[in-house]
Image (cartoon, rainbow, N blue to C red; front, side, top):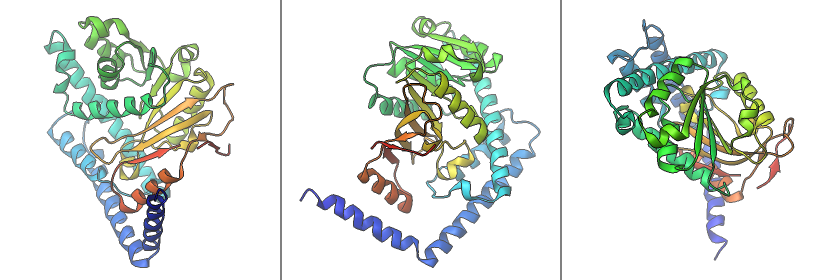
Length: 344
């Protein structure tokens, strides 16, 4: 019968909800959460004592341990943690961002100084395969909603080693022009050197030093805007960034954001779908593999959209699958957003 799978899902979700209400289950989850936070706090303390975050064996070992601790799917909600833990998390994200920038700068210099065409050797970067997977994920989700291939793409916060832009341009959006923006002039200069010897990417990719809040008319010229995870580390900064994009992006243009879910939120800032005022949220995807970032695809609402609550698409079956995944803590979670306007 056509209705049987949905009915079975409802029964399974109800059973899991009943399990979660049991005192022994809540106690077990509480103990696991305490152990996780304790472990992450210990790593944070060790990282904080390092004299420098420049790539070296000790730095690499600690950050590898941190990532391996945070990657396993976990139902922890960082927004409900104590004020002290929240403060530690904010500092840890800043440390991760600083270390990530230094690591990218190191490999960008190595590629540019060693090879005639650095584009042929991007796999030298230790996390290159992660960027391949993340870029494929973002492109696949975007392609499900975009009515035509993007012609002009902006990437805000591209960094000194703009692997996301490079992979998207070389593998998935081979006709699009990419405009990459970063607030750090040294990052812009390093990124520009990487494509100089590549005739195709050198012609299609531009790099400019600019702060997001200085971009206005430029944003309106693009079909898609990618916002890097570390643009707006503090929640207030991220909300301000989203508001600026809502004011200046073209109506109907797509926004691709990176967020984090569960314990991975100790590595990157969290963006909730309801934060995207002025946008229609189309997809939210939480990976459960080595791809750390969650991905959100949204579309700019017409008439500016400023002051308008986020518009969500959701379907009953996907809500149920989300609930099942929350209980089992297994598998990537996909939310396909029916039209329902969130309150402002």
